[in-house]
Image (cartoon, rainbow, N blue to C red; front, side, top):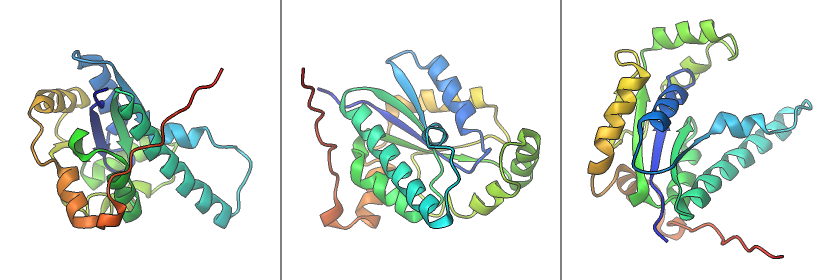
Length: 199
């Protein structure tokens, strides 16, 4: 079975990743794509209050499960648009170990800080200053296949840019280059365990 393609959008909160993902699902016409968003996984978690240590552990497990869900969907041949915030170095390293690097189109979603603050205030559903806290963290790895700027381009224009670029993915991909740089050989790509279905 051929692995699915992964369009991996990385940027701060309120940078426009989800809007781009929705536009991609509307215009991509050479496959069946699924939008997997880290916020969607967070929303599935229990609503009871958690202490700081318990919450930290739950968030880490959520991220790890999210990464492996992406891998499992692609492994089954599904095309996926991923919407993520790589604000901690371990998140990228974990993705580099569980996703097939040649399947990933790594897209940096950028937006000016003042526009992020404006969007955050307009949304009203995010802690004030969250995007600013993430701003200097999410792109520190410094390597993408493609970048777009939602401060100067609409989500539709960014999605069109990604669609046009998708058939011409570079080789090696940004994920391949980053894995060679950031991941020890003992941590190299691991396929997800096969799903066994029993009657």
